[in-house]
Image (tube, rainbow, N blue to C red; front, top):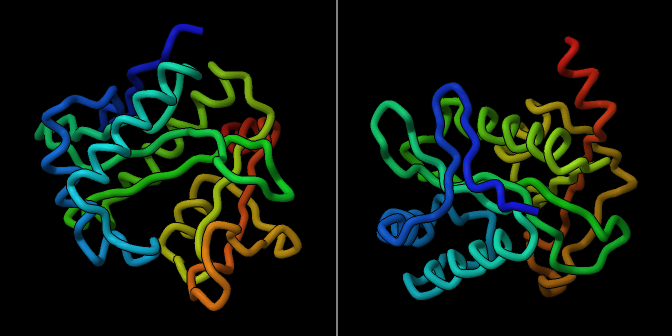
Length: 189
């Protein structure tokens, strides 16, 4: 499959990563507010390694986490995309949708706009039957995005993240899902 390196939404260009994205990405990943629902902030080296993994995902599978660029300013603001879940759980194998935006771009609807575009790619171009998303139970902002794009939660699907230690407040996770059929119904209004 030819990699899908670019998607467009009304206000955003979802594109392949460039080397000059690293400074803004690293600044975002060292921000304790941006990373408050992750185990820790990321160093510049860890941020560069993540970009490398994302590029590898595109090379191997043809899709991944797209860099987000505002069309009006050309500014890099974060990422949104699709990736294969990297651990075993009751819902895997699965493709998840995820996002991370720099703090100054929160509350403007960019995460939902980009996530909706990524869902369309997943269902229309990749032919996926279902897409999942998960986050720490305490991460209400991401759950609001999941709800805004039509994803549904069944509390029976909630799980403890296997890569986090017992007692970590981030370990309890919620799982949201959306099927191709649900997405089509959302499209029809």
